[in-house]
Every structure is written in structure tokens, then in C-alpha cells.
Image 1 (cartoon, rainbow, N blue to C red):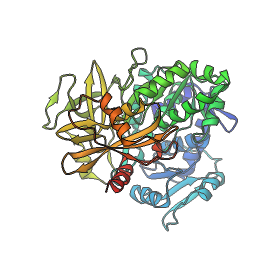
Image 2 (cartoon, rainbow, N blue to C red):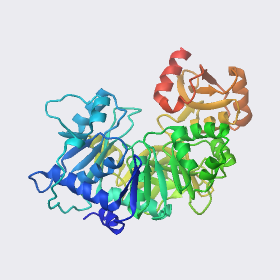
Image 3 (cartoon, rainbow, N blue to C red):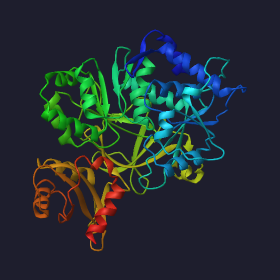
Length: 493
């Protein structure tokens, strides 16, 4: 039996999941996932890595289906509830899914393609009353396919093994000191590694309790936090923007007390500007712990739980992880203050990109995974300067971090949100372009340029910044940088 299930058996009577105003024990999860596994096997002894998709609401059924697929020897393919029909068709055909487990509600709400070879089964209609012997699984077996965001190309299927998943979980359990007394709210999407591993699998590995409260809704989350009892909280930057806005107008002290009483609050999946760190601490007294990870490797770097949590930094290497920085010529960078590409090695690194052997090959240098992120070591902590493809702006012979300019813009109290990209320019190579969301009043280009010049005098190039027409509130989290870049190019032309 895989270690994740051995762990669950240690906590049989403890409450594992709170979902839809009901509580479910670890024993409940093990029993129902056994029945789902038995249904999937039918007259087989082992699914032998057959791919099984599931499109399900973020409730207790999600974890039972995921564990059931694993127990039957299948590869789980979690499908996005927000995916468009064309996206679902790509995921299904690329991963060669023949069966999707869903629910009547999800099927009616989502555009599940009608394909001749595809069976879609409602969880409500499954016959789950017979349990049979389940296969013995080795950690090397493939376990899951997660799809990347596809911001610069078509989404790629990232194949991970049970060993990869176990390593990702145990690394975080050690680093963040997870314990069975913890309780965490889960509102993140469950087709990404942040939700599946960090928010769900880590607490379930130690006997903790997960409150599955559905897709993020700021008022619903605040209501739950106000009740108290949560000890761990993890979210993405756009969620912290929404929470800050809510807290600034909130009068009930119970919400502030709920946040202040937590032992650990984290941010990830994208860089969180130091100005937002500062604002969050002013409101809640909490120092956010920022970390770095990606679909292909799980989490790799993290600020220290018991040490310094430095805004703008992603900390040090996590247990069992090896990293190195290389310059453009492939030379190892050992000095602090020099930027280079981040490479990662360790048991948590994925197996392959599905159906893309050449892409897999070019993504590794020997056994080191090439992340595509530009990083710098600064006073013992790693700092992410951005994706080489979208966050590093090459202008006038200099490499400029879009993330640093974004943080500078956010120092202006009248700028609520922003995103910075580089757009091609004949003279400079690239010029700096910014999309901004204004709080109260319009701002002119000259004002923005002067503001940036005041804080970014280290860059020996003109402050050439184009400003995108004001965007709707909280829109930055919904617009990828490549899309924003196209919009800015059109306006610039």
C-alpha cells in the first residue's frame, strides 16, 4: 500500500474533511475510495496506468475519486471546472482518457465534449457496494497528469509518479511543520499543484482537517475565518488583493482575530509584491511566508517557517531539493548578486511531458530540470526575477525584472494593481509597458514615469513606460502577461 494510504489508516477516526456542512473521517475516505477503486477495476486486477479523468466539485467526493483511481492502479487526470470545451477536448485527447467520472451538476454546467470513445459516468449512479482486492502499487508507478497553464504555448501534460507526489508532500510536512492538530480552508482550484498538494494532500498526510469551502468567494472565506479555528492558510496574490480590500472596510474584530491566530500563512503561484506583504502585516499582524514551485517540481524554495520571512524573496532550498544557477553560457554562478537560470534536481521532479519526448529532453540538462526562471541569490535567500520568457525585459543592453518594476509601481498609493511586460522596440530592443488599475483618480504617463525614475535610478536607461487604459478592478489575475502584451502592442501601434 502506498504511504499516503498507510498514513490515512493511522488517523481512522479523526475528521479529515469538512464539506457541505458535513464531516468525514479518514476511515470514510478510505472506505469510499476502496469502493470507487473496485468499481473502476470491474473484472480487472489492475488498471495498469490507464488514464481516468474526473470533473468534480471541490468537495469530499474529489479526494475519494482521486484516491480511488490511485488504488485501482490508474493515472488520475483532474480536469478544470472552468475549462472551455476546446480545452477539455485537448486534455481528453492528449491524455487518451476513455472514462471521466463526474456528477450530474458538473456535466450540465460544463461543456464536456461528446466523443465516440469517451464514457462519462455520474458518481451518483455508480454501483459502490462491492469491494475487491486492490493491486499492490510501487512508488515508481505513474500517478497523475496535470496540465500547465499554457500561457506561452498549448498546455502540456506533466506526468508525475507516486514517488514524486510523496516526496513533494513529505518535503513540505517537514519544512512547514504540518501536524494533526492543523486545520486549513481549501478554496483553491483542484487541477493545480498548489491546491492538490499544498492545500489538500499535506494536511491529509498528517491527520489534519481540511475545510473544503468551494471556489474562492471573498465574503464566504472571511465568514469562515471569522469563526476561528484555522491554523494554516495559503492563497495566491490575487486572493490577497481581494482580502485586503475586504479587510479595509471590515468592522467586525472577529475576522482580524481569525487571521492573527493562525500559525502559518503563505502565498505562492506568482510573486507577491513586498508592498502587499507590508499591507497584510499592517492589517493582520501576519508575516506571509512566500515560496516557489511549479507543476513540474512541486515546491522547491521557501522562506523559513521558524526563520526570516523576507518580502520579495522565496527563501532557501526545501529539504531534499538541490538547485543551482547558470549563466547564459552554462557556467555555474556561485556569487551572490548575479542573476542566472534556475535548475532543480531531486526526487520530486516530474517524470516527463506527456507525448512530448523532445520537449522533455530539452527541458533537462543531464538530470537537472531547467525551470526557465531567472533567479538571484541575495544575502542567503533566493529572489525570483521572473520568467525568462515574460518577466525579463531586455532593454538598452540591460536585463530588467518586470517584478521589481511592478513592486515600485505598487508603492504609489493610487495604483491598486499592475502588471509589467516588455514590448519590441527598434532602438531599445524592448521598452517597458505597464497595465495598471487605478484606485481613485486618473494618472498621466508623465506622473508614472517620474515615479519610476525616483525609485529605479539604478537602471541607466530612460524610463520608457507605456500605460494601458485603466482595467476593471481585480482584473490582473485574469489576464496573463502574454495576453496583456498583445493588448499593449496594439495600443502602442
